[in-house]
Length: 250
Image (cartoon, rainbow, N blue to C red; front, side, top):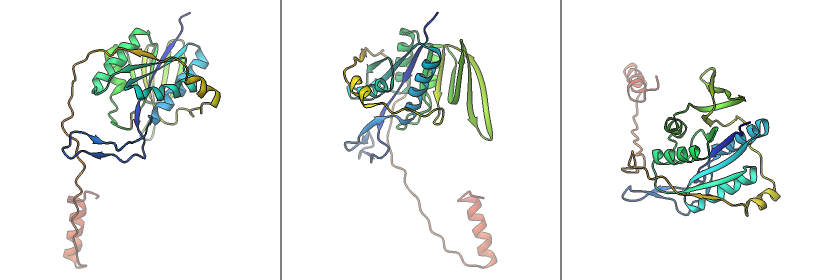
């Protein structure tokens, strides 16, 4: 019997409460000592990996790409119940570079299922699952709200406008999961303490040429124009025109 290996990819992101600014020249972000956390959507990916392991056996491997500080979230995944953890020590990669490194590691461990959160709250690119799938040459299903596996057959549900979309695929597969697919467990104190001493594999990054370059960060410029109108028929007509042509709300 083939043991299913579930690779769960997680991100180290600034806390949602952090105040983030843009440098004067627009070349970077001012984080101001912001606290970093486990990407909230990735909690659902970890939990789904653990649930699938409980149902079908196998092992759960947690992976992150980033600086040494990101080991903190791998400790969280281990405390929740992941069997092992690895970090690809690389920073400054674009989305393609991160995906290429994830795909290389997934190949190395012969992952049957690659799970991710639907998005990372810092970049919001929504690209990772589809890019990893393309690089591995396997199907990818994004923003999944329910996942059922029987043998190598997978049935996934996605919430869409006014209903649900049901898709079927076979393993190996890449899946990004949505909030609500499960209720992530809270690690217990003994598991948190054990996780602090568990080994974390350090993986050499794959050299990848960037496909995109950040040109500039810019704070949106708010444009405000007050108009005072009377109550004549002409003013009312003008008011309707403004709502339609400028505000575009009707």
